[in-house]
Image 1: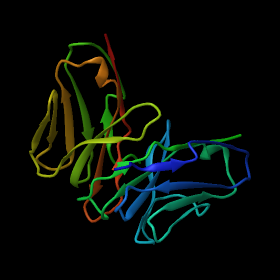
Image 2: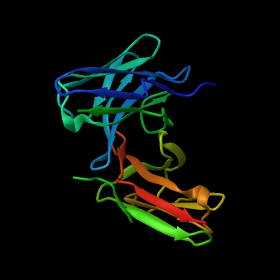
Image 3: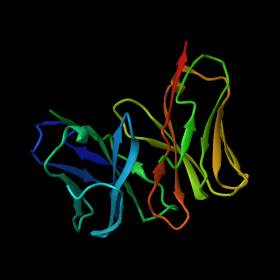
Image 4: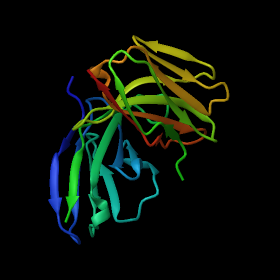
Length: 114
Length: 111
């Protein structure tokens, strides 16, 4: 079956703009998690959605938000972009929520903020 | 504060050598996972260790979970160039649904 897909793969924005990233999970998976990966901070958890509800949230400012649709597809939005938001944004899907569920990662969206 | 510390950060070895990567924490984890990430791709799960003291083998890779569930190691025997990549440990601290990642170990195996 198809893996996790993320669009777009690459994005260039300027400071102050906003951006929306999209993630389509593996068919049948109801949980989608988002992560930010940077050389300095590594992989950091942003938030998790399960059945359209945000289950968990990492330590990121309110400029980072997300949502999940009834078909489990998820979007992540970052408003008022800052240079430090440049990163690889990864989403991962799993059948359920929590540690017993293997997460499958997409290829990521590389965001560059100029 | 990095909850999961990985060492070494970088490792460059010759094909055929053995290596060990460590993942340490002062916190107890319900499980620990190891991922490998290649350029332009997302991390791929290699293994999950759940029981303290558990040892799992995946071909030339051996994973161990510490007895106290605070640390784990990944040992690669006779490394090959195809093993090159970023190795990440990750875990769910007890009573948390947030997956925490280590800082990663970048491995280069030279032919």
